[in-house]
Amino acid sequence: MSEFYIGLMSGTSIDGIDAVLVNLEGNKHEIIASHYEKMPDVLRHSILEICTPGNNEINRMGELDYAIGKQFALAANILIEKSNVKRENILAIGSHGQTIRHHPAKNFTLQIGDPNVIAATTGITTIADFRRRDIAHGGQGAPLVPAFHQAIFLDKKSNRTILNIGGIANVTLLPTIGNVLGFDTGPGNTLLDAWTEKHLQKKHDEKGAWASRGNIHTQLLENLLNDPYFKLNPPKSTGREYFNIAWLEKYLSSSITPIDVQATLVELTAKSIFNAIHPFFETGEIFICGGGVHNDYLLLRLKTLANKHFIASTAKLGVDPDWVEAIAFAWLAKQTLEKKPGNLTAVTGAQKETILGGVYFA
View 1: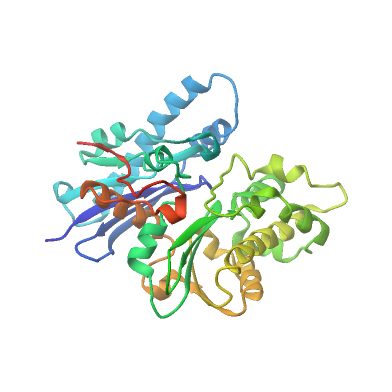
View 2 (view 1 turned 180 degrees about the vertical axis):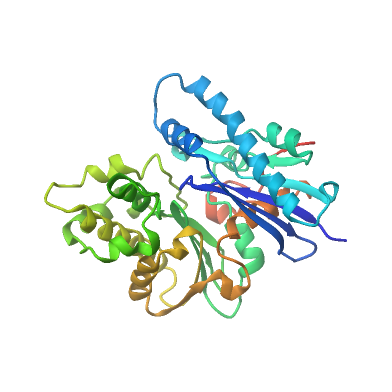
């Protein structure tokens, strides 16, 4: 019997919703159908606004929670229509939600996109709010994908890193011997996209073409890398509320051109990723997923820095790099329904492995 689950993911970049229908029977992670639903500009703008403190936040969040729930449900319904799978055969939807605050040091994290709305609109049991149970047990609440990475990507013959470059970059370190580790390395695409939007009025720098024409400003890079976050030992996690334009502008001077800032931001992402991996694995394999896999200049810089590693996308392992995180939340939904833990204590710092998420029955 097939075990069909849907995973829904909207990350720090806030560009859209990744929706994937997968068969998770046994040890499978077979993609049946996939769909990308662009985030409407009005919703994206509202999310960006609420990611920073402002007036009337509770009312704004309540309205946005409902609207994003509807958008997630739309993505799921279009996905189902694209597939040949009957709605009643889908066991559950795993929804990450849209993060608007992540403050593990203050013991809270908040993802919106009302799962009641998703369950009611799709007619499918929905599992959401995955992070807060981990925080309740003293963890960071993120990253949560390493348990999934361990389940499908672990190779006892080689030290392997799964690198997700979304708005924030995170790594899962899969050693041949010992505990799996994982943490947020720092900014992935979030600063690159924000700087591009500010200066080019585009959502992102296509393939890193703009950055590739600039020069890396070594003093700026050094100042950025001296930020305390990069010196923290894992477990650690971060988000847009920390790494944003306001954070960047503290370090800028008027003498640095926008194109050179962009080139330096690419180097910041590449260097902070390399610095995070190198103390654990001097050699090995790095498999990349997430939107950053399409930034050719970023990948070039990363391959230059980590030249002792074999580097490829997760497609080399049979999993499309654009859908890895969405599949992970389908897998986490299955773990929840089967009353199995979804976190790794060595990753998040939680006191115990625990069942994650709340179940909202259809």
